[in-house]
Structures are given as C-alpha cells and as structure tokens.
Length: 388
Image: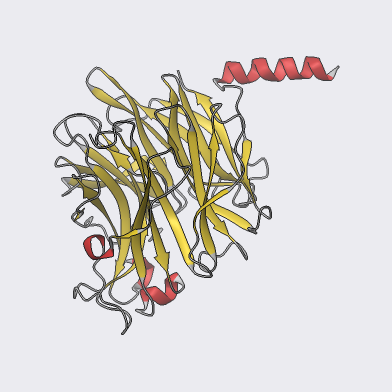
C-alpha cells in the first residue's frame, strides 16, 4: 500500500475518532536547548488567538529541585508549530517552577488584556522544606505584549503563604508553620461572569508542621485577587488531609470547583471541592469515584455553557496504578457527571509513566487543546481534540 493511501486512511480514522489534524506535536523535548528535562506543562490562549505554552526547564536532570527555569513557546497556528524557546524566569542555580498563567481580561487599564504568570521559587528539596529546612516563595510577573516581554517579579509570599520562619534570615513569621508550597500545576483561572467577574483564582497546596505519615501534613487551598494583583487573599484550607496539587474552574451560579490530587494514595480518585463564594470557603469536599487517579496531576477548564450549566473539561492519567491512559472528559452539568471520554494517550505495554501531567486550553467552540507529558517525561506534546 502506498504511503499516500496510508496517510489518507489515517486521516479518516482520526476524523472518525473526533480528532483534529493537530496531534502530538512536540513542544518541549528533553535534552535540547540547554535543559536535560522539561516538566510541568501549562498553557493559555490569548485574545489574538495565539497560544502560550509554559513549563519548567530543568537544566541538569528530571529532579524537582535544582537549576530550574520557567520557559515558554508560542504558537500562532493553533498548535501546529511553535516558536523558539524563550526563558521567562531564571533564578540562577536555584529553582523557579509551578508556572500558573492566566489572562486578565477585565482590567480597564489594559483593554487588550494582561497576562499574569504566577510561580514559586525554592531554596531546598521539598522533603527538606517539609522538615522546616528551607523556604518556598510565591511570585508573579505580567506581560502586556502577549508574552514577548515581562515585568519585574512581584513577591506576594506575605499575602499567599503562612510560613513560620523556616530560616533565621527570612522576614516571614506568621506562626502558622506552613512549609512546602506550590501553585496548581497548570493554568490559573479568572471568573468571566457573575458576582465574582474579574476575580483571579490560583489553586495551590501547602504542608503544615512536621512531616506526617501518608502525607497528611499536606492540604489544598487557593488564593485570589479582586483588584488585578494589587492585593491577595487566601482561601480556606480544604478540610481533607493529603489533598495536594490542584486546579480550579468557574461553574454556573457563581460557583467554583477545585479538583485536587490525593497525596495519601489510599483512595485513588480525584478530590473535588465546591465553593459558592468564589473560592474563599468550601461548601463541600468529596472524592469523585468516576475520576480514577494514580496520585498525579489533573487539569480542569470551563469551555462553554449549556442549559444554564457549565460545560467542563477535565484531563488526567485515568489509571489508578500508573501514569498512563491520559483521558479528556466532558461534563454538561457543572462537573457532576462526565458524558464524554476521549483517550489522548495510552501505552500499549501498560507499564511506566507513559502520559503524566497535562493542561487544557480552549481552541474553538468545538476544540480543546491538550499539552501533556508523554513517553516517560521525554517530551511535552500538544494535541487538539474535536470534542463535538
């Protein structure tokens, strides 16, 4: 059979499965452009139609601590091709990570939108920070030219973190003894309508006090701003020990959903928290038995409305044993049930971390982009799914 015939058949099969023609385009390839590893993807769409893909560029290896930069590529053709690598944050030999970008579309001072990139820095391994031997800080930078250049960093640790003063030479002493700290991973969110229109909310997590068995010193929380980054407020902590890496989205009736990883690993399902006051407090928290998870990250995104309810997309490695079977799900009822499922990536060998962290972006009315880690963290690739 000639190659052209095979190509036509493959295209028809992909169309039948609901895929667009943009599938698994490499965006960040480990071992290239000065970084041995790329991890922790995040992606946003801009008002001009461009896509910005962020991740951690890990200089010396795949470890979570060390010389880690936040890097960026852009696409102006819906993810079919990507620009050269751009370094946004470089803290020298120390760590900068957990990029959580969002576009502020409601600030009258910036009618074309302003990008916020929230991130964390750290001066020791996570295990040592949990013991009180180190500090994680919270920052943001902004861009008013679609990410071509960025502002000076703004340190918001005093407003979004509650460390007890883990180091003698730090200025933080709140007495709450929060230690490890991390944004999201993935994009942050902004309310587009309703009572909290304009509020930017960043899902996060922290550890408190000495390390506990089964990671019960961890809890999820969030922080938010109603005045375009001038002031920040902490949400209530999720009342479920072990709740960890989180992502959030807007629902109908002014509600917010936060979806978290269960670091304890005793229940291999996603943790869902619902807020009716814009993420300040939590009405209820529960495990979603329809969202299996191997103690990994997930991404959630509102992509439209139907009959007064939010259409919510969610992606994660839907396998309780390992990071594999990356699946995109669609809900038409504010995330209560999941009506559609699309398998994005699945290993034929059923072993290893084939597909891990992911992040979602709206491409069009009928298309969702998925930026995800593939092939045992060897690449971060981009795929577009035609979901309706």
